[in-house]
Each structure stands twice: as C-alpha cells, then as structure tokens.
Image (cartoon, rainbow, N blue to C red; front, side):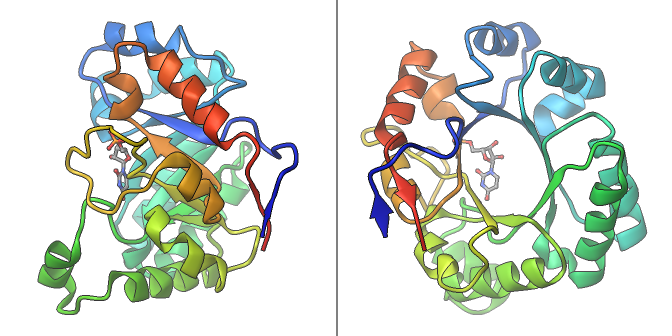
Amino acid sequence: MLLDTNPIDSKRVIVALDFDNLNAAMALVDQLNPEECRLKVGKEMFTLFGPDWVRRLVDEGFDVFLDLKFHDIPNTVAKAVKAATSLGVWMVNVHASGGPDMIEAAKDAAMSSHNPSLLTAVTILTSMDERQFSAVYDENHIANKVTELALLAQNSGADGVVCSAKEAILLRQQVKSTFKLVTPGIRPTGSDVNDQKRIMTPSDAISSGVDYLVVGRPITQAKEPTNVLSSINASIKNIVYEN
Ligand SMILES: O=c1ccn([C@@H]2O[C@H](COP(=O)(O)O)[C@@H](O)[C@H]2O)c(=O)[nH]1
C-alpha cells in the first residue's frame, strides 16, 4: 500500500563514491548535506584512501555504508567486520553466498562492536542479467535465487540485503517489514545504464518497498550533482511504502 504521508527517513539515497581521485571525491562530498543523503565507500576508494578517510566522512556527520562485500571463512569475515565497524560506519556487508555460518559470525561481530553497524548481505549483483546469472548458477530465475539468499540472510541474522529493486515487490512478501532492502542499479529516467542490468527509477524502487537507493554515476558524473540528488529526493519524498 502506498501512503501520501511524511517520509520516515529523509536520506534514503546513498551516494556511491567511486573515484580514483580524492580531491574530486571531496569536491563532491563538500557539496553534500549529511541530512539529505548517505555515502557509500567501495573497494576502489577504500583501497586507495583507506580507513582514515572513511573516519573523516563519519566525523563530517555522514552515515557511511562501507561496501566491501566480504566473502571468506567465518573467522576471517568476523574479524574484517569488527575492523570495519570500528571505523564508526553505519552499514557493512558480506556476500550472502558465503553461507549461514559466515553471516552469523559477521552479525555477531557487527553487534559486539562498540559501534554496532547494520549488516547487509549481497544477493545477486545488479550487473547480472539472466545470461550472466545462468553462467554461474546453471539456472535462469534470478528472482528465485535472490529470494532464497535473502531468506538465508534473514535467518542468519542479517539486517537486510543488497538486491535489485526489481526483486523488491517479491521480497517484501517474504521478509520481515523491518528487513532492509538496499538497491543499487538505480537510474533516473534518461540516465546512462552503464554496466547495470537490473535497473529501476528511484520512485518506482521506493514504491516497490525499497528502503535505500544506491546511486553512483547518475549523481557523481552529473554536471550538477546536487541538482540530481535534489530531484531524486523530491521524486521520493512523499512515498512511504507500507506492507
Ligand atoms: O549488486 C550490486 C552491489 C553493489 N553495487 C555497487 O553500487 C554502486 C552503483 O553505482 P552506479 O554508478 O550507480 O552504477 C557501485 O559502487 C557498485 O559497486 C552494485 O552496483 N550492484
């Protein structure tokens, strides 16, 4: 059901910072308001600029999703999650396909930290279409696998999943209403699709039950990034999804 009421969360957009140049990234960050968006730091920027830079973003008041998608044996992932949460980040993630023991170990680590972070699990990358998917899984029904991995993640203690908004309606029928759906592959109408395959517009995604929209290049590569962010926020501000 869609209700025309005030939004619960005014920062449902997570801006994906994928830059190889710190000055360029900070020129964008300096224009952003932590009350209007969250930030995502991924493998490229974490590798180049490290934990001190992540702490700096946290100190500037941003909720940071540290998107390192850990996937290893439970002990290693737990230690990595512990290290990640010690940076003060808002969300960390693992691959759901690492299995229940790994997700449980990650959740225990995320909870026992002095700064507990949300733990999400990546289901099937939004860059995968049926052809890519069937080359890995020997089947071609992406939504079934996403649902299977989301239920596994939920039963193992994860706070939510990273999936495509295309799976949100189905997932909302199966997972708890508090289980977070975090969706990359968000493309405002007319934007370049780039390497994303399972895409949706911001308003369609929120209307389908998504909690957080991950938006990178449509904002970061725009001539006026803050205009794009403002227009996305305006397009979703009155949409509240209720199961
Ligand atoms: O399934 C996934 C998981 C993570 N990502 C990450 O999200 C952003 C998307 O950036 P765009 O520029 O908006 O395409 C990027 O950092 C990916 O690493 C994803 O796209 N899909």
